Image (cartoon, rainbow, N blue to C red; front, top):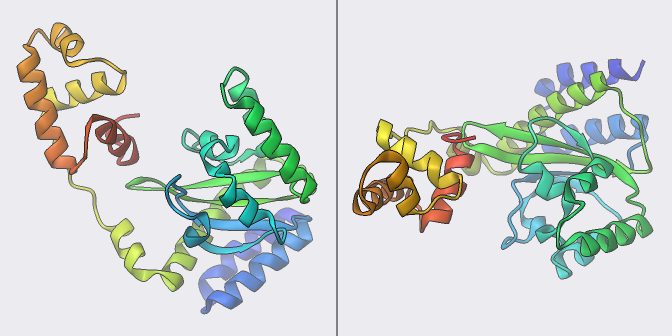
Amino acid sequence: MKITLLVQFLALIDELRGRDEIVQEFERLLDRYGFEYYGVFQQLKPSVDPLSLLLAGRWPELWPHIYIRKKYVVIDPTIRYLGHARHGFRWRETMVAFRSDPHRKRMERMIVEARSHGLHDGYILPVHGRRGLLGNLTIGGKPVDLSPVEISLFDAVAKKLFWRLLELVNPAVLAELASSVDVQMTHREMEALNYLAQGMTSAEIGRVLKISNHTVDWYMNGIQDKLKAKNRQHIVALSFRLGLIS
């Protein structure tokens, strides 16, 4: 059974010493499963070149350049869906979540273009840590049907592969991501933070907590300092990433 291949890889990966050796064994696994393309990424950001966050990968020749030039990372439904996913999911499932999205037409054009380069379907397996979503493993090409058990095992493979490659490719980033998160919030700050994440203004938060707008702003300034955030939007983004809110 193919499931045995995944179990064997999970048992073997810690014994593999070099990046090339790990990549070679992983690509052999993907070939047996029928996946032509893949990428192991640190968390993608719209303002950062995706290739600079690639730990290992194999893609259609021109696709990465098209993806970057057309800034598809901003509207890619799989990447947007990834921000809320806890487990691996299939590419084609994501469009259902964006039926009424204003960027849906552009998403559909991206999918058509991706298919013209051989990226018909695939899966994304998120990698989480103490600081939230850290990266992902993307596998695809021609459609391949995975069972729920296989998706769970690929989830485990994604985590092992991500950390092993990061250890070999960028140990400084590994040390930073592996460091503990120690943000001490008061009960009131956590209340205000959760209401902020719901989209409330200072006035609305003040009415709920029965405190003045000035006091709410004082709490927000304290949270911003603790998180080293640039503004309130950055506070919410960092709080989700650090697992302070969900």
